[in-house]
Length: 182
Image (cartoon, rainbow, N blue to C red; front, side):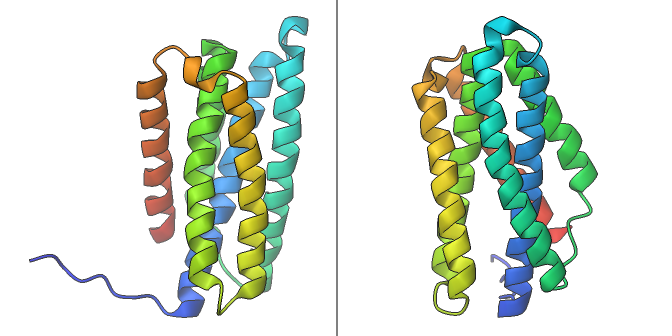
């Protein structure tokens, strides 16, 4: 017999969403910084470094919004933030060292999970928290743009793309589940 999950109250569920989304944006900034650390070292990879800087700036905007929402709603950030920072930066560095297409594969995998996550959240709070739902939808659009940019950049042509993408997506899902609780 499967144990029943206790349904969270609306304020508690929203706090959980905000904690997870804050951590996700924090991780995304770290990934892009790791990738820029590699690509920013060579004039040959300056164009992708500039593209990553633009995407990081959008993620910074999202992070700032969640920083503010955490304070306004008195929600604590996840205790996992230091680990997500190291993991995100490391993932960025490793995928960049694998090449531009692998870096794009990383972006495509992460942004696919996150845009689906925002979509689910927006639908969940649409009636009770219309402003928050609008924020989720706005940020989802940015994530879709990042995903599409990565696909156009050759994400699906990365060496070992199916395995790399599955691993990164699984890591994102695991990070979401852990952050919901810690």
